[in-house]
Image 1 (cartoon, rainbow, N blue to C red):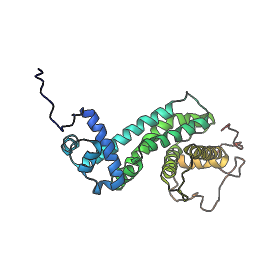
Image 2 (image 1 turned 180 degrees about the vertical axis):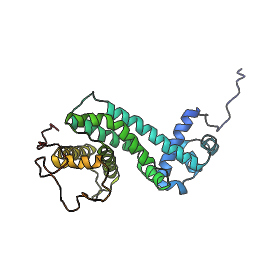
Image 3 (image 1 turned 90 degrees about the vertical axis):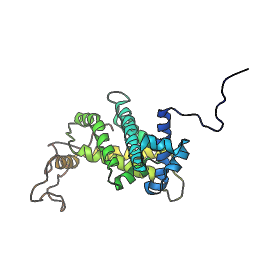
Image 4 (image 1 turned 45 degrees about the horizontal axis):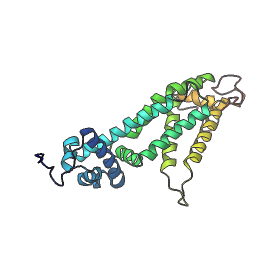
Length: 257
């Protein structure tokens, strides 16, 4: 006759700490995105994770600390994904597939973490500049390969790279989260191609004398008297490399993008 004691009825299997943590972070992301930090409760999060409220408190303390951990986890996972996207695909892939891969990973990350943008925006509202940090982090990862590509065309992109990176991230965030008038969202592949081609057109424009002038203005400090702000259209290049900050002799874009 067996002497093994039966397990207590109704008691759930105790999960490993790492699995508990992953479940709580995922549940908290969903609840915070849906209800906001103010309305969210530890009880609702615990129920979504399949753990006890006590387990949540033991691992994360209060709700505010849990929210900070959710934001931190999002940032870390996004950083790993963006690093893989930027550095993958060969040393010097053509610009078109490279830019498409950048947008692809952003769409994929948003699809895998549907509440991420709402939580990151709320973090910004609460004084936690999570989106800003992600953009800065993306700029650091992105700047090396991107600067190399600009250098191939003789362009020192300088501080314009920071602005361009913010534009890439901002455009994608808006397109991913927008509500379509007819209620039918277009295919992600079509949206990614649209963003890619729009970006390539902008890159080509920056290789013209007028574009070179803009890059040069971003690379230098503004004059103390505020002149040359281009508000009146004066001092702009004439398209032949004269009158602007672009290198003499720059002609129309001849890149293959």
